[in-house]
Amino acid sequence: MEFNIKSDVPERARAGCIVVGVFEPRQLSAAGLALDRASRGHLSAILRRGDMQGKSGTTLMLHHVPRVAAERVLLVGLGRAHDFGAGRFRDAVRNAVRALGQTGIADAVLCLSAEVKEHDAGWRIRQAAIAASEATYRFDRMKSKRESVRRLRKLTLLVADRAGLPAAASALKQGAAIASGMDLAKDLGNLPANVCTPAYLAEAARALAKQHKLEVQVLERKDMEKLGMGALLSVARGSVEPPKLIVLQYHGAGRGRKPVALVGKGVTFDTGGISLKPAPEMDEMKFDMCGAASVLGTMKAVAELKLPLNVVGIIPTTENMPSGTATKPGDIVTTMSGQTVEILNTDAEGRLILCDALTYAGRFEPQAVVDIATLTGACVIALGHVVSGLFANDDALAGELLEAGQNTHDRAWRLPLWDDYQEQLKSNFADFANIGGRPAGSITAACFLARFTKKFKWAHLDIAGTAWKSGKEKGSTGRPVPLLTQFLIDRAAKILNRKGHEGRQGNSK
Image (cartoon, rainbow, N blue to C red; front, side):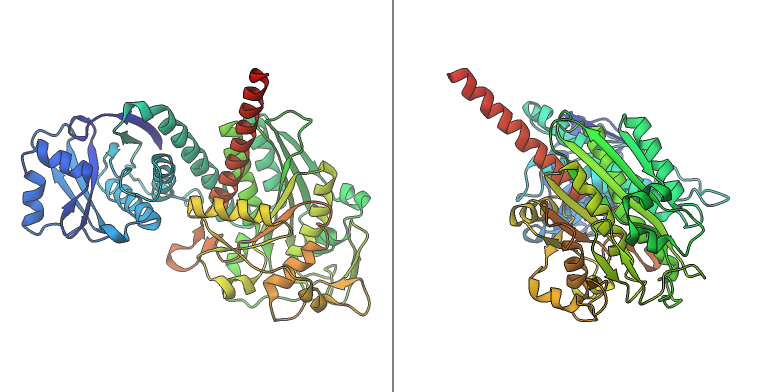
């Protein structure tokens, strides 16, 4: 979808449709009132007749409203004004775009961006772009006959103050880039495992690198053997698909600057290995590479925004399959760090591929490392499908990620990483085990990873509950691309502010 910013009064905006909000009960938004005045009470008369109450989730299409330039006016219910916050705003945008999609309207003007008082105009514009893209996303490339749909092609966001156009355009660019990254992450996540193999992910990374002039390297099995990545290779042993370690580098701040490293779990299908999963919903284990997909999506967004910082994306990718060569419960492997692990459960494989990738990340001397993984069902039990689990060995880094999540409504919740939980990982035969029993399963998984991150600032996002949806709406969500991209946007802004401050100091001397 094409996005645009325009400064105009609502009644003069020309398009196939203009969208305005209605609060409950029957209260027009500021843009709606402007249209009502221009039409000499046409909208308020319709509301008085009871055709639209303003309940959240409702819409009403009006045709040929007098003295309004747009061909149609779409009224969107916003619910009660005192309840209208970030979530309701995003829902309103999605509802509007879905309603527009049912009509075949090609272009529309959105006038909902002045309604969320607790956020600034830039936030509203970014979120409108993301929510609109979510509403129009379709994954039909695997169908023999694709549904013929006339989709909304152009969405213009109206800004009242012409002086605010540059800031609005910058916010729109960020929102569009995040939406683009989410689309890539969704596409990769939704592909079946017989298509999206480790080799396919490697080719997707190469294509992304070519498109955006990134540096890419793909390590093969023999390379991992030389590096001593015994944990990652132990997971790959049962599959005929060769594992890959994908390394993408974005240089936006010069090669001398330390990068932020993103490490994404890329298990393209997880049977559980010898510790075989139950059959129900095993098809959803194609989503076990959503951490990897989110890294690729974030790298795409960062490159499109040309952020002034360095970012390295590291993706360990493999299948986890049962076979005569598969790793067995009780096997002991030596990780790249030299630490030994007793594998008590082969279905706790994500931490095994991540631990070697985290050790590998250390060679970049990163300023911070964030790993992203659909790691534990225990996190779903603890937090459901609303927020991602966050663990960190650095309070400031954790704060940055929490703030970015709150800003984008792609939220996370911090859980403890205390040494007390490390006791559960004790092993009689190796340095430690790969599981710590049922209690606090998401925490002990994070504690396992923490043993490989002592040399740098590190955070872990467990996205097992947020990376995809089940049931009728089954599919990848594209999370946490918004959180990660906003985190990097905020870091880049701090760099620019620091440079500006240093420049002012230099000029004053």
